[in-house]
Image (cartoon, rainbow, N blue to C red; front, side, top):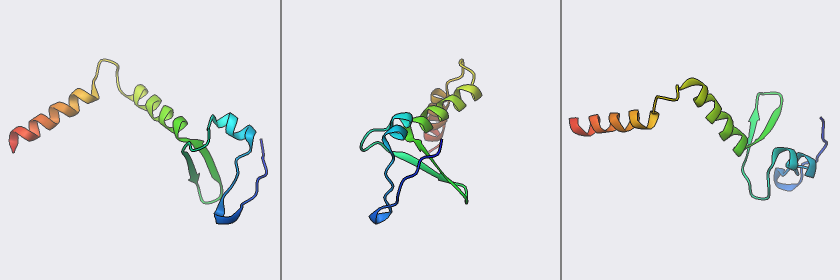
Length: 81
């Protein structure tokens, strides 16, 4: 899908209604702009957060608690001080 928009004063780009609905963004929501040197990709911060959660879920077995590991590490560091 290609959508044409214009750059206005201050470098602002308006995301058309259809794109805002597709991305599920509302006024004031953060969006992430990724530039690869040739093109810009727009994603919602919410989408990026969900993607990061999926990556961690795939990489970390359910029986492992990263929070507990971090807390244990911090306790060991505090005990050494």
